[in-house]
Length: 189
Image 1: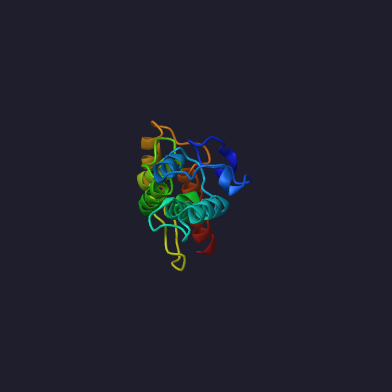
Image 2: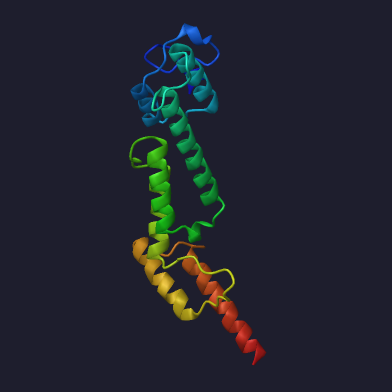
């Protein structure tokens, strides 16, 4: 964040000596975050140094350095949450995941997430999963897909996709699994 800013109305440039720029105000730091700008640990360090030099006693409680530190930590928490979600199969993303990422994204950038944001995309995936009846299943519970399960998934999927079931979609995969299970059962009888 700091290394991209150059004017006194923006946050300072990190590689300039601290005396060569003005300390950004709390509002300027918040506006930078609201605009989607990342606040790095280097930004926090430079702002803390300048604030310490100006006050002679260290950063001020609730001042620019504290605000920058808080937003930087919130952005790191947001990144951590994104990493957790990317490790999950899409079919296991729930409404709770969508709520958590929306709250985390809002805190990280000091404003509610907009349409097209990461949290909006996660919400869309969660809505689709809910419509298809795809809540996550416990890992230690054996799961068998029946033809009835596949039929229900096909109905839900066709509702979502305007009467069509996409080739290779979840309902098609469920139908295939149900067919294989039925074939295996018939073969063992």
